[in-house]
Image (cartoon, rainbow, N blue to C red; front, side, top):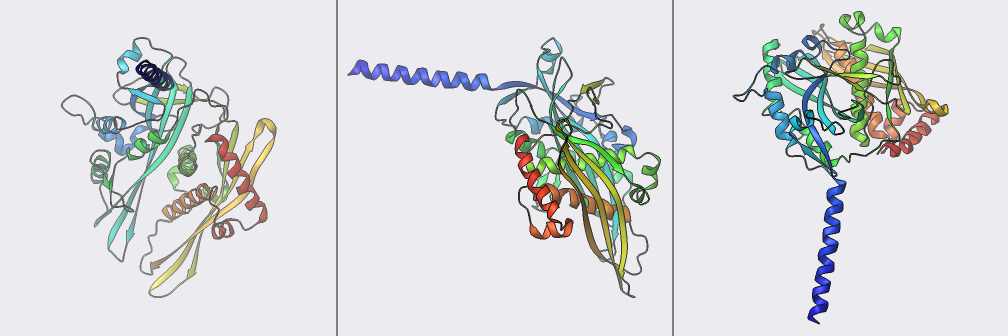
Length: 402
């Protein structure tokens, strides 16, 4: 009897050892490479001007304050099937087949608007990031998780560039209160959650990404003058905004947007405190997302001596297709309208900020309604039966990229 018990114990130990070894084998090693910038369209002094002023602020160990904050977040990550290695020096010695992970800042956009009732300025900074994984030897992208964050804050006077930078510093380091939950969040709070929920695959058979962003003449007429001179940064911002919303609500990774996406397209990447620029080769998406911004419109609906009621609207066409099979899943016109009452004495209205908000809401609403269609949203966005069928098609399609 005693011998039988010993045999059972040995079998149990053996089974546990096999399971343990299988777990170890399933966990990949991923090298953390750091915080970096994407340089395809941007001049750091303009498109990421606030963050650019902070990267030279370092602690007593010579680590910039942004990287220090990000490392704290990354060390909290408990990924499903990979371990994060922080000894990047080992990677540079020759572990060339290793997978590298970095957090990339693509762009930051600042808006402000005066609120006459509270007599304050409502400020908002939109920041666009990507968590990217790529092969260190080939410099080929494995996958990318886009996300965006907003930094809202209120001031009595219109803030100076120095004051805006101070808010950004606080957001990167100690964090700011989330307006919805009252909890403190920082620029990298989403990174921890995303990586905890993310499962890194050996191979991605099907990929999707924004492949083109076009502004028609009616839309160009409403955009700020600086974008009229060079529209490529705005195309990039809209592609990132759509991608981050789609990723957030559908739990998918996307191929980063590059103008004129083709086989061998490259994304430029530069790490902080380094002059070296890496060219990361991007895979060509199997499924294309084409955004055509058809126009923006502002209407004065009601005028009085006290308040004026305005409507701002965004109109666009969204096409999602599989070019190799000549298959179209969606090719529909969408619109979104917001309404706001403005005191009649206020004449200096930031129309572009309103148009940006209507576009943000449209991208967010589309992405959210893929899996949870709301009849009211469908009717106000596009009330045709064809659009409803298109949404159902996209819902089935998203399952392929989970």
